[in-house]
Length: 347
Image (cartoon, rainbow, N blue to C red):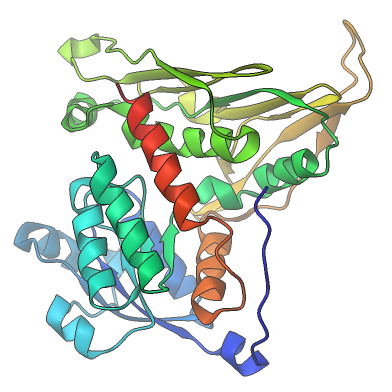
């Protein structure tokens, strides 16, 4: 699967703070990225936040999540020569903003899922590769402890041949305006949140032979956007699927991943729940059954994982990629091919 390769750098290179600038505050994960950078103050120095939309900027200045972070222009940010930029703009501006940063010669951490256009996304992948710059996509479930464990079991062959991957990421948006907003994207929920799940399927089982989108609108409260996303993927040895519903009661706690192989099954459910006082700290619950078929009996073994900050490991991995301690295990080619699959799933 995706192997991490280490390069020979001095310990000092790894220990120094990564100097970063954040662009945008409109993405759903923007404030959480800022808070995590503050939490990781021994590893990161947040030089400033760029927000070119006056209305968004006004709201950011009133938001305590951004307290202590200076607001600067893009031109001022370039003069600071940061080690990297974090792109946290609204979805439609992610790719053009990343392109501008890459053209200026800086490493990029970009929130998901990227452009609705295959060519423009592939262009930034090729641009980053040609300049030998890091292009790091912020798919937080890649760094979820339970999912990382499950992937390791797959890589080691403990589950045998993979027959199916079933991934769900549901929620219940009480505000119909949020579901109306989904109509801005061709695939609605499949584009907005389904991208996380498609990444899990592709990274575990590879890319499918056939993509069968079944996205639809529930029509609840008169909202006609595609707020119910479903897509099936045909493989030589089975069918996998992703489901992402914006109207599911208790949907947050029924987010799950089930990996079924010829020798065993791992179920992670829920993918994460908030623990403690901080909204960023999450815990996963999982069970596995390997080599024992209990028929009607439950012979699964519960698995335990320590709670962790939702974005902590992801940002620390990004730092390692920039410093050269590791190579990004998700290659430019993988990201481009994944994005193609996301767009194909949004039809």
